[in-house]
Each structure stands twice: as structure tokens, then as C-alpha cells.
Length: 76
Image 1 (tube, rainbow, N blue to C red):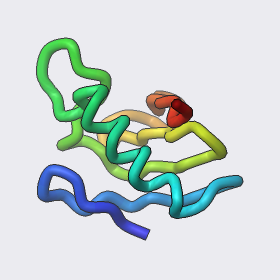
Image 2 (cartoon, rainbow, N blue to C red; image 1 turned 90 degrees about the horizontal axis):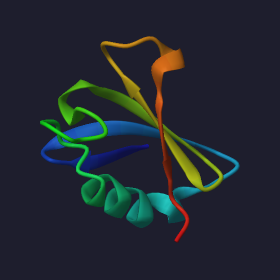
Image 3 (cartoon, rainbow, N blue to C red; image 1 turned 180 degrees about the horizontal axis):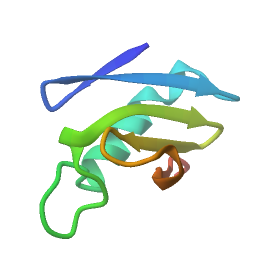
Image 4 (cartoon, rainbow, N blue to C red; image 1 turned 60 degrees about the horizontal axis):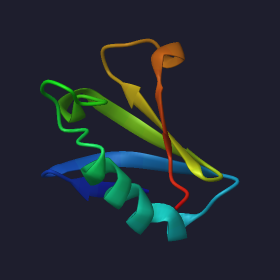
């Protein structure tokens, strides 16, 4: 599945979760300011894919190895 964020389509896979987490995922991405620049968690331009595992989202960068993923909590 793919989500659209900031005019980009980002592949998302779900493990122990489902598509019902998409609204919360988008909200957390926007709230955490993952769009790049000073003080941000993740450069959205470098975002390759997202894995949603339970209540957590793992963000993978095109520029970093998989071990350097960023974890965002999706629970309330």
C-alpha cells in the first residue's frame, strides 16, 4: 500500500497491524515534523518506505542502512 504525504507517495507495509492505522500514522508524521530541516526527526525527501508494526512506525531512509531506521510511536 502507498500513502500520499507532502506530494510524495510512500510505500507502507503492515506487520501485526492494518490499514486502520493510516490516519494516525499521517497525523504523527505531520506532528513530529518529519519534513526535514533543523530539529526534525526525519528528512521526508529521503524517506524510502514505512513499516507499521503494531503501534509503531519504522521509517527507512534511502541514504541510511536499514539498521538506522527511525521509530515513531503511534499510540495515543
